[in-house]
Image 1: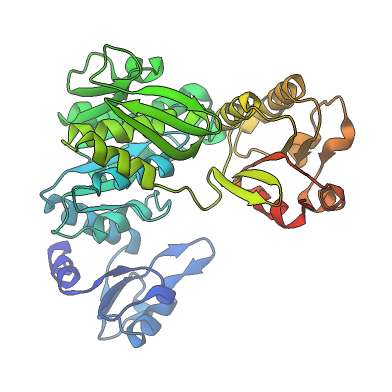
Image 2: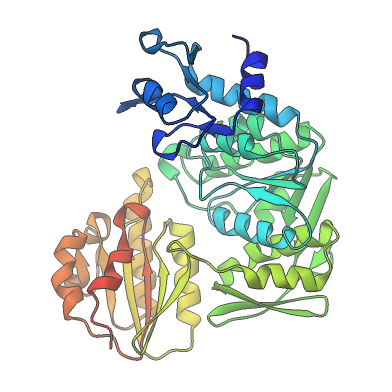
Length: 428
């Protein structure tokens, strides 16, 4: 069966599904394989649960309701490319080292004040998630927003062949996935593959005029929309404060976000610029920004007893960690607690980057500093008693703490799951 024929099946279905636990009636099930699973085994179950057909790549599981292809993943991606070619509205693609999901949600919230918008669900931003996102877009939308993640060279280039963005933006270039990218320069090169696509296809880039790296990477390409704090950009936005929430001004509108830290300014600013570029009135832009509430351990602020907890435990890398710590150090609060977890995928730079964080913390925070994880444990600290090899080894100390009238900051890589701290601390 050709991809055009499979596309006809897709169009008559309820949509694509790759997980039998999420099957809806009349879904088109596509069996994917990985190192530890083979979804071909579940093709019959998918049909029993209501799937109209199951696409498989192993003839051993063929039935009258299956469609045999050479590779299930390639079929999914080719199907997404074909579907994308038939969509007649703009797609906004974004990548970056930090803030991708937050920025995507902000853009969606702003544009939704005037348009029908759909965006990447959660952080499904890889070679499977981007294809599924494209296939979730129907003909009734005004905009699609696609988040693209990567930890190696050429991944963004590949994802652009699926998403085919009309507008592109990079949140920032930071020290994330250094092991896979081969260092900071590798990160810049890898993320800039989005700019390469934009230039090669005559599309439009949104550029943060306050970020010299973005300006350098886009070069002399003329089809850009700029934003930032200077008077020379297309959309000027003023940062008023970030103690702890970011407050901004765009034109005559005072915008009070629910995001903490100056490091979130760029994420909010690009959402404002995109809204303005697509002719939203300033008051609608304001509503879109102020409607967005962070969740899922991303810059959440929790009230626990007399304490304010800044829970930013979704992920961490040296750039985001340092930016968050700088913001927390500026917070006007006398009683502060810090709980920092290991940062992963840093390769040969790991020891240096963890030591740099420890050095910054000890220079800017006098007490209540706790480091959790084997990487932090191997650093040199003034007070070795605040280092723990694992979360489990830290539990007794955590349980003995009784923060009162304190600001508590929690951040670490996803694998550390530091949100668990909230349940162990004896808040008063």
